[in-house]
Image 1: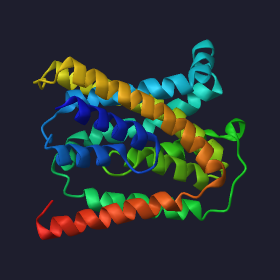
Image 2: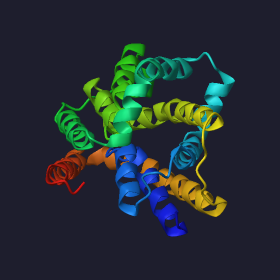
Image 3: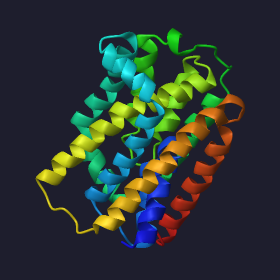
Image 4: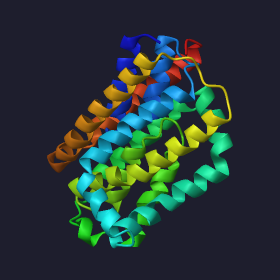
Length: 259
């Protein structure tokens, strides 16, 4: 993996982790394009470390609040919202790992993401702020997050959509979605490091890994800030159209035997 490829993959991960178009799906496509299908779990782990650093910086004040009051409402909302993904991940991780490696369903997953985004954008605008989010809201949003275990189903897209379905205002839906990503990304990293400790680690230069991680962190930060502001006034339908075009293109390429 060249330094340029590392930089580009970092951009892909950073932007698509928080823009609702699926980071895992785009990373799969990026690696395939560069001929890096065997780049492996260590690269993915470090790319996710980058986006975790980005969201930790954005939400540093909230994290301090959680540390000061670990059993407060915000902490409990994140716990409740994370439970569905933990359950699904533990029960079905082997199945989804095999699906991720083949990419056979990736086109359909992009189409599904687009459908959810389009439906959510048509929901009558809600007015719930962070102080009004209930544990039922958190569990509902977390259940949508669990569906993002499929590689090309966007975690941010589904959780933002779920927030809109529960009548959160658009800015709060994005805000809570990204806040909920912290335990999700951190948990994924812990699992990936566990796999690394018991298996083969691919040979990637330190400089390429550093560039990929730094690029992911920088563009992840940009994506979080941009997306929260974007949703204040703009529509999710532009992202739905994008992933529909991408999904149909992948399906056509798969049918033709090119992809």
